[in-house]
Image: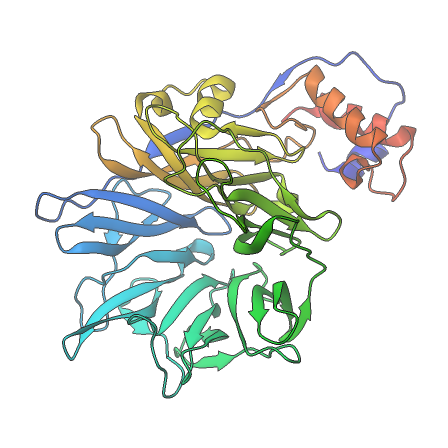
Length: 439
């Protein structure tokens, strides 16, 4: 039942809040190729907006190779370059239905290792994404592709120019042609990190000039605009790692001025136009071999995923999920205790949750499986049609009503359940109707 339908179906009054169970969640490993040699393993780095396809890397004695899975896969398809050879590197983004994949590509030219970028159309060989004219690479790196639009037509990333300066760029995925994005006045360079699902908004940063850095820049239909994003005191910069589907929420990490992995660590953070850059909770207790980071967000930031330093399952860092109210739980513990899944508890650790689908029902990452091997995983969660699951625990209980009431008291837009722009009794009545409808 939609919110509008619920509003029309109101009969008045709040009934007793009971419990309605959501759909089952699932967890499974994605396997690895094992194509030869003693080194095996895999990791999933991105899920398509619709949750159908996943990309990442497959570890072999030949290095890490670009890998692709879809919702039916139990082992990766290894992507190939233009010559038909396996493509060293890692997939970083994939479009809806898995039709277009983009990733890094490592190649030897004239005896030197070069890092470039590549795009794959479904079932095809790779096409190199162009570099800037007369590019001077940094440590062998010419380009870094970061994301692709939902329809797969436009990729975004970074390319080094003839002064070895990072420039924000886009690529036409059908031809590999490169184009630089416009800079704000006084800026000399920047990077394009992510692109909204509809392809209209690109998110990145710019630098140069007397006043330093624009930590978050939005390009809307190609026009740049700096966001109101003040870096909190004590931190040097905000690094962009992910966005929500419409780019209204930007996720990443805050780098301290005086960084120390124990006493002053890197912190997980997220930006919105309403709250600016906020430091998010962490599980704590880890030695932070991996920096705390929020890597991706679903629609409206309902769920955010990433990794934090925390001893969990014997690992010094742990995949984590953040909820709309800012609270955090370890992914392994959440899946086991809230959804009754026993498979995650058998793994030695879920290390990173790297990406989540637009609707928040599919997330991917990697961990250490029961045999001690690094392996990618995919999790499916109950449908967001369970609209009143405000505490995102997979069921409808009294705690959802309490969470809704807290948001209502704070006049939070999420509590405007009947979407009329006001906070009234009808929001409570709409909540009740949708709650009674179940998941």
